[in-house]
Amino acid sequence: MLDRGQRTITEPQRSDARLIWAYHLMGHKPRPCSVAIGLGSHDLGVATATAGFYRAGLFPVVVFSGGNSPTTAARFPRGEAVHYREHALGLGVPDGAILLETEAGNTGQNITLSRRVLRAAGVEVTSVLLVSKPYMERRSYATCRRLWPEVEVVCASEPLGYDDYVAGLGDERLVVDMVVGDLQRVIEYPDLGFAVRQEVPAEVCEAYGRLRRDGFDSRLVRV
Image (cartoon, rainbow, N blue to C red; front, side, top):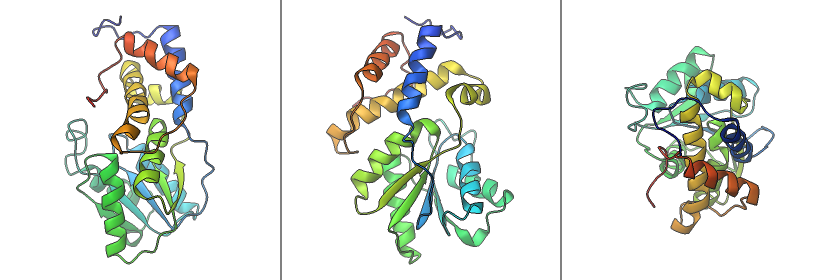
């Protein structure tokens, strides 16, 4: 069991976290889509990646989606979408290519409310590039397939591995907590109607069970 005051991760725990991290990546090749949705979170890298995909010509318009949550209010006091927009503008995305959705508090609302914004703007959508944190790709895919089944979904994120992400965030225990929390949602949300079901390999389930037993649980939700 992990001592919550302990910052060091053991090598077996790190190996399990890397395995789950790899599972969360969908492995989609970014390609041109009708629109992009930048999913709000604590991670400004989502806006950085979205700006890069825009400059590569992969979409003409992006919705940055997200209000605030307990984990982002201090970092983004004006709301996730607003800060994402400001960052993207600084990276060369023109204001006319950005739509804002500033109310969403979870991934389902990101999708549902972004659809509403796009509809109000008269944007026709047949495919969507979902840009998220790397370890959120699979959950965002499952959520979008459940709530917007008629569109083609392509998932993308910053091209960062587990070790690079840990180095950037500076808190490995938190990263492990987050990858465990996202996997809980991938496993349990289909039963609640929040997402489509996806196969989870046995070795990933085993790694998940070990990390939960070791106390990596700060990002779990009660379902």
